Length: 312
Image (cartoon, rainbow, N blue to C red; front, side, top):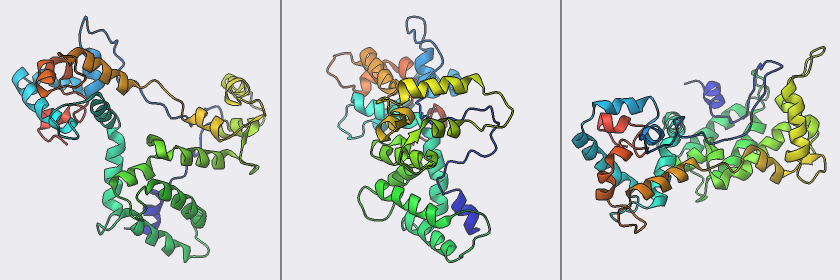
């Protein structure tokens, strides 16, 4: 395995490449809706099935009998019950839905984990050895500043390494690769964004830097309409204290907005429909009694786990 290609897939710089001049570049992290279907249980459970399974894989459940669905869903309920107390709480269901919703992230982590935890002794130590080998080359011929990259990534790792043992377990590795998904990593996402955009080094993002990050201007080309709209957005909404620039808090509000929590709303809906005795927790029996609502819920691998029999 070659060292530099391995490092480049691990180095976490935002690279925009050769975007078209009129193409808007997006830095804002949004949670996607769980389904494009209308949520109307009076007519059908299409939204819930799409939310839990993904709209394509939801179709695969047409081949499952009710008995088969109940049997396999029962096994999934055991997985949702994180503390194994025999009940599923709203929080446990929400966590499970979010995990399934972010399945693509965990797949990505799994692929990288296999590459970097070569000796099963901690991801970061292996990566540090690769970096140090590169730093022995005073003039790398690929145009990358590995010393700067190491400083930036080491800072990110220290924030991800919550137990401070200098070794990344899989959860810490996930936080390192996808910091926008973790509350305790949001500060580093904001800091790295400011560093990327702040060209004059004052620690803030002014209007020119904000627009310059989104729009590749070319001479003798009319500015697209969306650029004017973004100028207004900056002045009216982004720059809350009207000092002509965005600080850390304003940058966080921009790139990590407090979106509507689709997973929480769906968990509340499922509880309302399934909690027969209204005690604020679900038994396996209550969930299976509503199997047609839960059928292969996001508690599964977007439906595939129920079909394949390999629940997580």
